[in-house]
Structure formats: structure tokens, C-alpha cells
Length: 473
Ligand SMILES: Cc1cc2nc3c(=O)[nH]c(=O)nc-3n(C[C@H](O)[C@H](O)[C@H](O)COP(=O)(O)OP(=O)(O)OC[C@H]3O[C@@H](n4cnc5c(N)ncnc54)[C@H](O)[C@@H]3O)c2cc1C
Image 1: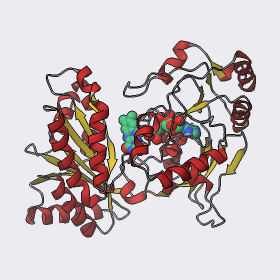
Image 2: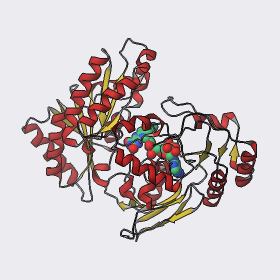
Image 3: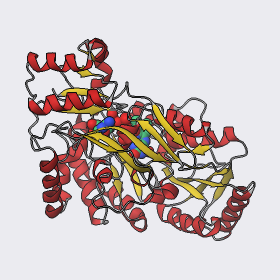
Image 4: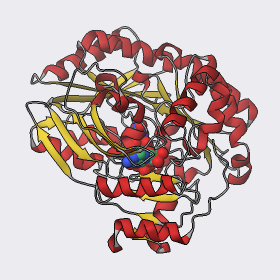
């Protein structure tokens, strides 16, 4: 990884870049730049000599070629919803894809949609709906996050259990490689065994192997019959037992299986106006289950069977099935608000870890005990896509404490949590990537053989390391 010092970019290079994109394609206005230099959690504040706003792949290619010729570093940015700081430049040229927002093609025979990198996830959902299809990735940041960012972080979200992460949803990618060449990979093929799969290298590369400019993405049938329920469990272990039962009972209809702790639900009730306790009694843990099917009435029947059996077996203490779309949305709002509802409570150490599903309960128990012993009084909010073995393990400062001392312990806290995740055969980044936040930390955990192979791939494609030089290794 290159060092963190800000690069110097000469005025001659800046003039050259301005000429590539024309008058409306760049900005140095501090007010225009400001929202792109601060990230969602307000943890990283960036700097850039110029914001570039190309409109076509030809312009992106010319920008990258000029940057390669002049060894000018680039940070690509999509919707700026990334949670590990990879999109925030530290003096590099900031290349935003916000003007590349076209849906280039939709084909329902192929079940494929081709969208440019700057298309937001919400706009993609709308475009799929307009042709009677579904694009199944769901994230709370859907109004802002973009196809380029989703691909570059291999985003997950709430329907991974059924449809997989972005890796499983991309058929092809168009990207500008670090020397300025264009990889024209917008394939619509489900099968293509002709050697290395370049799109899979670009997926999850966090902007280090090129700039994604468009992608061909899989579409699915819409499953109109949906049922959402909340169930009270006493522990993560019981949640896993309920997950197993739900898979057996539903015949593959479970689309989301999300766990929330009491502390997180309590913050949502306090800080999200209009939120109501979802079950009759507060429960130490709550699971949100969504099932979907094409057959009318199938999911309501399956959900009832599941909850009845789970009650009979003592797996759950209570449950509620949403009786309307509004109630289903209200249940989801509590889950999706788990992060935002923490904000008024002060500083937090955030961890996005994965373990095998069977080790989640061990992880939560061990990590909670360890952080509370390390920093007495901290408040743990554990929640996430438990069906995928993915837990967001957030550690908030003590109720009556100050932010600064808690912030000062962040790295030590992360070390404790990450060591435990690795002991549970896990990963220190389930879905957000490594970015600025975790790249150095990851070197402690990744197999040196894997790091060497990743460095070799990067050196082959980007020998000057101009693409997102602070990110990865
Ligand atoms: C409220 C909230 C909820 C979230 N929930 C989830 C969740 O459930 N699951 C999940 O996985 N993530 C989640 N995220 C994180 C975030 O939304 C995803 O990481 C998303 O994929 C980022 O997309 P973006 O367009 O905002 O990318 P950015 O934040 O702009 O960039 C992210 C990374 O991708 C690179 N990049 C962006 N565009 C390109 C491009 N065109 N070419 C090459 N590199 C590029 C950037 O350099 C950076 O390294 C959430 C975030 C928020 C704020």
C-alpha cells in the first residue's frame, strides 16, 4: 500500500484533465466538492485538487490514460455510501460516476439489464419493475449507492440468503483498466468458460483495478406473495435453530433472516419517530424473517407453520406476522434503522464481520464479554444478516461517557473483535470491504500467500499503482 502523504498534482495535469471532460465535466468549487469529501459516518474527511464528472466511457478512458502517463492517482466514487472510507480521496483526483446514469438496455428473454455505473440501486429497481422483473439486491442505502460502488464492494444486503451477493448477480462488466484501455465485457451469457473471469477480479476490487463504467446484471421473476414476521428469541443460538427450522419448513422461500439485539431495538424505539415495539413484550433478541413465493398465500401458510412449530418446540417466546404492507415496512424500518438510530448515542466502534453461521453465537458471546471487560460500560449493538453469517457488531461508548476517550480505544477494540472473529473461522470484512479503515489491519489476518497473489495481480494491471492507492495492499 502506498503511504498516506497527499500527492502533488501539477496544474499542467489538471488543465489536461479539464480539457478531456470539458467545462461542465469538472469542479474545484469547495461547496460542490464538500459532500463528496465527507462520508456517511463523518469519520473521514478528504481532499482533492479536482472533481471529474465524465459522461462517457471514452472520457473515463482518456482521464485514466492521462493519469497513467503522469502517474496521477485516482479515487473513483459512486454514491459515497461506502462505510470503510475507500471512496474518500486524500489528495487524489476524484472521479465521480454521477453523470453516467443511463439504463443502456433491458432484455427479458435474457433476463438482463445493462446499467451505467452511476445508476442508483433504487433506479435499477424501478427499471426492473417497469419490465415486470426483479433485481434482488436490497440495501438501506439504495437511494444513493450506485452500480459501480455495489460491484466494487461486492455488496450484500438483506436478500443474500436467496440470491447471493453482487458476485452472483453480475454477468458482465465494462471497465476502464489502469492504463486507460477499455475492457468491453458487457456479456449476457450465463455460461462462458473461456479462461480467467475478469469481471470477478473487478468485483470487490474497491476501485484498485480500474473504473467500472457499466454492468450487465441478472434479472429475476417477481415473487408477489410475501410475508414478513418478527419473532422473539432468547439468544443468537436459538436464532440459528430457528433459521434451520425455517429453511426446512419453507422449502427455500426464506429470503431474509435478520437478527437484532434488544439494545438496537431500544435505540430504534427512542430515536426513530413513529416506531413501535414490534412484539407484545420486549425480547433480548428479535429475528425478522421474510419469505417470498410466486404462489398466492404460500408464504403466509409457511410462516404460520414455522412459527407454530417454533413456539411448540420452545424456540421462540412470541411472534407477530405483518398483517399489511405498512406493517411489514414498519418491521423492516426497525431493522434498517439499526445503524442510524445509534448516531444520537455517541461514538461507536463499528465492525462488520462474518463467521460460519454455526459460529455466530460463539462470536457474539465471546466478543461481547471481551469488549465489556476491556472497556467497562460500553453498549453492544449486534445485528445483521445472520442467515449469511454476517454480524454488524457495534460497540457504543458508555451512556454517560464522552466520545473522545471511546474514539481513542477504537483500534484496540477492533483488534479484540477481529481476533475473535478469526478464531471463529471468520472474516474481518463481511460486506463493506477494506477501504481506508481496514486495509492495514487485514494484513494481520490474511494468508501471506493470498496477499502476495493479490499484489501480483495488482502490479500486473496497475504497475504504477494509480488506482485508489490507499486501499488494499
Ligand atoms: C445506511 C447504509 C446501509 C448499508 N447497508 C449495506 C448492506 O446491507 N450491505 C452492504 O454490502 N453494504 C451496505 N452499505 C454500504 C454501501 O452502501 C455499499 O458499500 C455500497 O456498495 C457502496 O456504493 P456507493 O455507490 O455508495 O460506493 P462508494 O461509497 O462511492 O464507493 C465504495 C468503494 O467503491 C469504489 N468505487 C465506487 N464506484 C466505483 C466505480 N465505478 N469503479 C471502481 N470503483 C468504484 C470506491 O473507490 C470505494 O472504494 C450501507 C451503507 C449505508 C450508508
